[in-house]
Length: 143
Image 1 (spheres, rainbow, N blue to C red):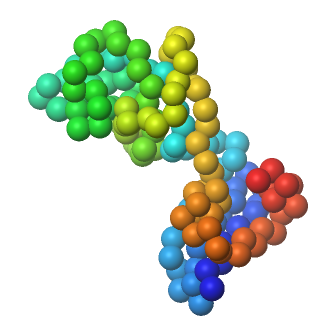
Image 2: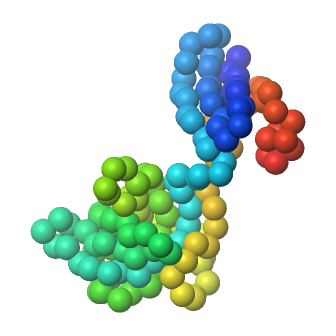
């Protein structure tokens, strides 16, 4: 039996997935400071970097990197395209992006289109038959 357990404290939720006491995965979720993984944005190609095999993409208030292998190879500078964050920003580096976005995104200016799933939702999608235990009624109600 797989269980997803969420231990909540002010500002932070520690989430684990376990099977018979063995850890399968874990995450730390700060609802007030989302990491952006899974978020969909309209981004603008700010600079093509052939030597790095990718492009820097301007997002709303940040800049991410879109590798050519993730769909930005033929897009010239200035192109506005939908992108999804696949890895959170770390250190001085911006988030890693993909242009392989399944959902249609309406045209418009650069900015956030939709928030991605939180860790509890990601784990529940990965293990749909898992029991979910949450020790905070407000977090449970928000899901």
